[in-house]
Length: 277
Image (cartoon, rainbow, N blue to C red; front, side, top):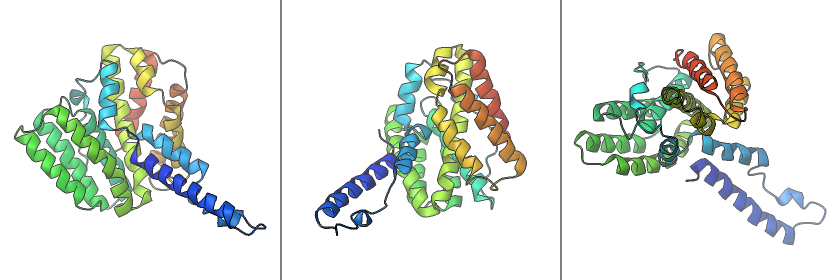
């Protein structure tokens, strides 16, 4: 399923193309370019395309995990860290919300009902603090009610979370602004990489590491963010740890194949960042 971010980008690009055709018919000869709206450039389109990998849909994640034999057991690898959302620093809340999203989405198949409900409730709390509107909260409440009383299968739940996933980023971007989106995505990616790395280590399956953790463009995306817009949004020691971790993850992910030692390093590096939350 294409990410909603990419769809928006493609729609904008399509709109741009249609207006370019009009511009070719009617513009003054001396200024044809000025009639073309700036809407979206190639760098923005590239960034939108990369976002597919940043927050893949629950269905995509489940297929990838099942293909590599690590779809079950992830719930037990989630660290029960207190992700407080009732704080004033919304940048921290955004990262914690991303972590909670990964915890919920990656464990949807095998998490005990009470654990899944708690993780989704944490996502709701984060979205509320970020000003994400009421739709997401109402959807999570409905899902939690049916998980609690056992009236929804986990297979159907994956489909429902797919639909919620398609709406959650554009809604939070509309309600809370562009600033929080990369931070939510960063939290989700770091926690997801950590949980998947732990499962790969337990299974002693380096092939799964190559398949699932080899995404240098994602590390590069967040590295650029930390070094530009993200600078100054966290204490120096946090930014320093993030920068160091992302450089190492990019180095590992750029290898043609990953070893178990590489996967252990991914686990260690993401542990270090997540401990700061």
